[in-house]
Image (cartoon, rainbow, N blue to C red):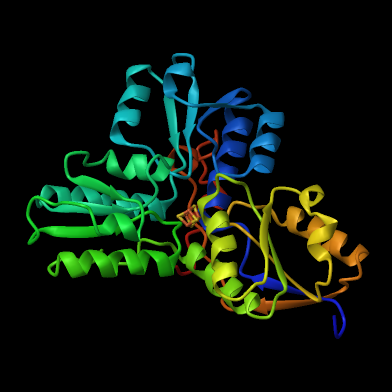
Length: 329
Ligand code: SF4
């Protein structure tokens, strides 16, 4: 090893506007209605966030039929299909929809293209909650395409009326490869009206690409079921990191990962609180990696208004946090 030990800290990293909003929505619901508040699925895909909210009185369930009739239920940032909304209404649940507005945008695109009788090729991971929600908007019109290889095999009814949409948290490069192969087979394939892969996913990938080329090791803080976190590990390896690992917590960092390592890149997924990154940095500092250089590739100042069910306080005033909505994607 030559030269001093160093950390390259990717920025942007961590919380995005949609995660911030969803977590605050659960906290506000607990404040307003008291515990317990039910949440369908993990509010965001991060074990630390879920555990903290559980300690405050949130109860996480898989489906709305586990929620007592009449109780409050929060829909997660990943969105829900219309069938879930109906099932909640049938049980008389008080639903609070914390779906990220950028996921809702993709839902609206699916509805619109289905109405115009397009076949929708939804690039995304089968079984992921977001994909289930989006596909559920137009189940007769949506086919999920999991990978570039699947693009070579998928069949459509009418190749002249096909559009692709995508999950918001995919690898940009892999998605473009999937679309390239789809277009080879279906030259009239239409693009989404705007990027479906969200600003936060894109920004975190751009930052880690810049870090990875100079890193012997990249540590991504994020949970195993967090799509955008897992993608950051893949992107780091593709862009030159000699090794890359994902951890939920600092105690998962293995000492042998640091053997012979001069430069460590660090980042975190869009559902990860900064405190978990700081704990990793402290651990690295203890191992001699005290020089931390931030590698920033974008500024983010986007904020979303709270779900409409939470926008007024009990006295009828507008909630200050609900007046957000500034910024750009
Ligand atoms: S990762 Fe993107 S789509 Fe998902 S919650 Fe964050 S901003 Fe919304």
